[in-house]
Length: 597
Image: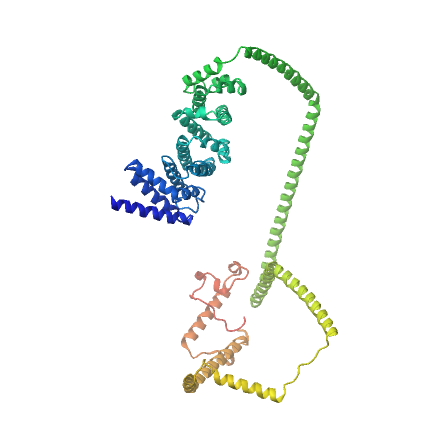
């Protein structure tokens, strides 16, 4: 027992420390420690449980739990579910707490703040319930069960609940599930302790009756109708003046209840309530009923005459309405016909343009074929090269224009910023120039005074003293010696490898000169028609592989020239290397040309 008591004292001290922080981060620890402490005390003596609750109140733990109901659920560990558990804990601690010090403060300050925080959290859950989150409805019902548990023990808090703006928001909800929970709370409260009805003031009781009657007349849910009927019956049985209030403010309530709720599963309770409502009706109400029937008949006559007048006016205006309707219909049909004709004309124009382009393309191809038939064989390649160059220039021109337009759109904002910056700089420079000119006018420039020999010698002496006192710590004498030796070794290595690097550079220059010479020979080579045997010696290679490849390329070119012209019309920019392999006798991967054809 002693060890358990010490553990409980340790838990209470930890709770006191955590509650003093008043932070959302300690919420989960406070909740778990409080539940653990209450679970230990619940199996023991009731006096120990009351003493534990009083200690929690005296040390401010219950005040922290009450304030925690307003924490942001998103920042709280466990979100809405953990705060609902805290509601259960604080309702358990407030009920059965026994006698505490400063009981007036506890009853009239602490408990109203707890009730207000409970209703605040219930309002927050109601907003989630109206958004369709079913889990929140279960938590909402638990919160109202805890509130009912507190109201049973402390009936003076009913007026605080009715005055709360959060309860008014819950009361005005159109959700049937929320309304059913609120009515069930009042029903359970009145059923367990019926003396509460007689203790409530007339204003508070009237507020409850207004809410019950409104919800029963504005809903079709049988749960709401049954709860409202049972609540009204309990109020009539316990409060003698409630029946007069119902007769005065809710005339015809019995007929309305019979019309809406008869045959919904609680007819016995409903008939009992209707009998109470109709048994106390005074005789003069019959006269009032007759006069009301006469007023209803008179209102029906007036409504019939008014409807007849409206019908005659509509019949009189009907021809104008028909003509206006026909006019709008014809106008709409005319616009639709114009849009259809316009769309057809655009499609026809598009089709004609497409046909013209196809015809022009066909004529161009035919002219090309005709020109290729007329041209000699040695000028076909030149003609195709010109066409290729012309097409390449056109593509490049279009691409450059497209790229420049895109770049201009991207740099347009930067260009504007640059112009604005230039304008600002120009204005600022003019402003500074004016200020300098005014300053020069007001105070003419005076050159600095020159240094005397004595001053120069004094400054030199100060510099030397500073250098001697504050020697440089960046590079020492040993570091300088090491750097010097490293530089000497690098210089020696460079001198040793310089001859080999120069030989390699000379070899590269010789290879480049040989390649340039071969390129010039190939470019200046005569055509095959003008070629003679004496001029072919520069093009001979000492490599057998190169000679074999040149012979194969020459054979491929000769075979491609022997093909008929219609076999070369596949592409306008075709090359002999792209001819089908089955038309050639020699396999090849690339073409080697030694001059112009």
